[in-house]
Every structure is written in C-alpha cells, then in structure tokens.
Length: 354
Image (cartoon, rainbow, N blue to C red; front, top):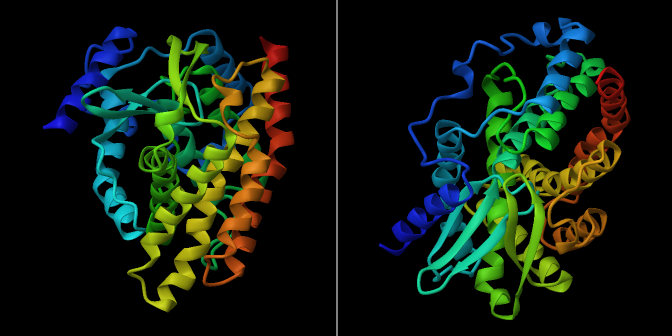
C-alpha cells in the first residue's frame, strides 16, 4: 500500500535526523506527575515557581520520545479520513498518495516533501500540535462561555499563555507546556471542534498544493535553523500560498454541508475562528520570537500573517451563511492579540532571571 510506504519513509526521516528510532506506543501527557489538576491551581501558582520552570525549559529542553511523537501522530491519523472526505465534498478529491507525519520542523507551516514514485509526505510540526490545543483551551476557560463564568481568571491568562509559547519557541517541538486541567461538557466539545479544524486546516493547505499542481513548479528551499538542523521544503511562491489558503478554507467549510441551518449557525463562527486562529498564531509567534531572539524556520516562505488573514477574511465573507461568523472570529483573534503584551512581560522576566 503506497500510504504505508509513505508512513515508513516518515519513520526513516525521523531516524535520519536522530529525532527518534520509531514511534512507540503512546503515553498520554496526563500520565506525568507534573501537571495542573484544577484551574484554581493554575491561578494560585507563585510567580517564582512559574519563572523557574520557564527558565529551566530554555536551558534544558526535553528529548524527543517515540511515545510523545506517537501520540501526536495519532491525532493526525485520526483526522485524515475525514479530511479526505471533506476535500471530495468540496470537489477536490486528492488522488495522489498523501501522508501527514509529525516532525519537529520548528515551522508554523507544514512542509511538503514529494517522494518520487510514492506520493507526498507532509511534515506537520510537533510543536504546533501542542500549541494549538493549549492556546484554545486557555482562550475557552478565560472567557465567559455558554452563560458560565470563566474557569480561569482573565488576569492569569497571559502567564499561562507565556508558558505555552515559551515551550513552543524553546522546546524544539519536543517539550510541551505543563499539562492544563481537562475540560468537560460544552467547553470540551468546543475545544475538540476548534482544535480538530485548526489542525485539519494546516494539512488541508498542503493537500491544496498537491491537488492544484503547485509542486510541479516548486523549488527546493533549505533552512538550517530547524530544531533538527537543515531541512528542505518545496517553495511555491506567495500567490500559490494564498490560493492554497483559500482552497483549504473551502475544504473546512465543507464540514458544514451536513448540518441543519440551526446547527450551522452555531458551528460556523467557531469553524471560522479555528481557521483564522492558525494564521493569528503565525503573527503572535513571529512577534514573540523576535522579542526572544529566536529565528523561525522558513519564515519567508509564506506571505506575512496579517496579509494572509486579510485575504482569508475577504474570501470567507463570500461563503459564510451569517456575517456574524467573521465578527466572532475577530473577537477571538482580538482576545489573543490583547494578551501578547502580558506574554512579552513574562518573557522579559525570564530573561532577567536567566
């Protein structure tokens, strides 16, 4: 089976770059003793304790483990069948063998790796697969949701986000932030929906490159600043990146086709929010990386995040059932943007302590 061959090539690439010998059985992040059990515990943690953990992570990032990588790979595997179905619903069935594999690229964008005679291997950053659900979880619990008060006082959102972004920028895609408490009920449903669609949008963007034939006119771009040394990707140019964004958004919107008008009105704003969150995170990570003196791999391979967001909003406005969907998504992006100064202050405190 060709996809099985791509899966083997993915493992070979992990070994080649000395990331891991293989993808062993998963061990959930919740199994470790160092975790938050309640949201009051998150808020009650002392400033010195959090600063110590952020500083220690910068000095000694964790090693990659097959189990942790396997857990992230299971996330991608669990979404692929639905994603292919959504692409077909949108009218863009992918005929080329395609496999999304977790890999510490250090890039917020997945990397296309054509495998001649086999198909296309897409490398999805392991750090991104930690960052997206953690940021979403903090966003959900720090805001009033479903008529209920926040689980985490908004004043503590910046410090909690600082740990998540610190792990993303300095953990090399191997280290995740200290695990946050689990959610329940509607909050958990919302987290699962948005995290799933955000991750699928990243992979759908690469599927769009494949379907549209962008790789036929691509060129190899190498960046030496990834967590595992020099990596290659196929660059296609900004106009094709915009096109892939639009196609990926249409694939995501296909998930609304089976919903009743009532359910679509409920789900659509959060689907749009998930798509735009991915692009907003590009901008936030870029700002934080610059402040921390970190180099983001393949930073110039895609248009600036703000231009991608503007292009996406213009495109989505033509395909949404309710105009309020853009407003809800903008509110979520604004909430994240307003936390950035607080995160930067925590980064400054870590620099002082270090």
